[in-house]
Image (cartoon, rainbow over all chains, first blue to last red; front, side, top):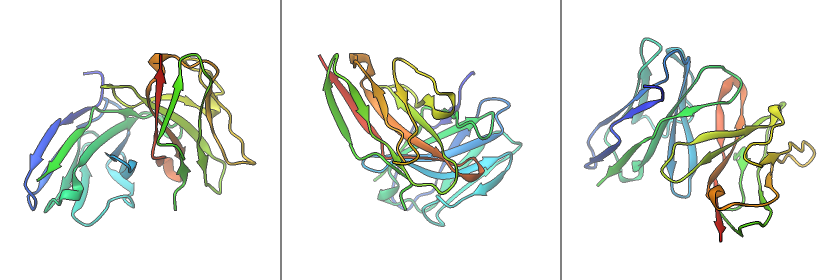
Length: 114
Length: 108
């Protein structure tokens, strides 16, 4: 595929359960970003990876959130013990050239916590 | 502290009218600024970046360091411009932070 791929596209879960969201970046892209999009909050930065390392984790809302990236490719965002306020669209983006700001976004994973 | 401010949640204009989407930023270094757009049922995508000084789909944006602004402008709005627009700032280490976004609605 040519674009950033995210799965699942929709996830409904019960409060207290753990969820994993997956992101497949564009092949060869070294930088990978996670954002959260919710009404009234805009696009909230969560974390970004350069290769497999995460220079900036400052946006993760709490220690229930974690992310990893392996092989410089696929990334997983994990939310433990989900809460209703975690409901949002989680967007992943990748970039091939650092410092130029052109991020290519996936379609997002919509998470609903009941 | 909010680094990118978009004061309007919704901007509604008539077709053919001028458009200005406001963006102000707070950054101590030399800023790199961008506008992203999300059309209905499409992915968020880059519209333009200040460093390129380009015009895309009739939109331009000028960086004003004195006013710390990067407003997006178009002289004549079209219905297909209706979308969500985000202003973004590249911070140190290639971290891109976004404003809250402005919905542009162009009425016929």
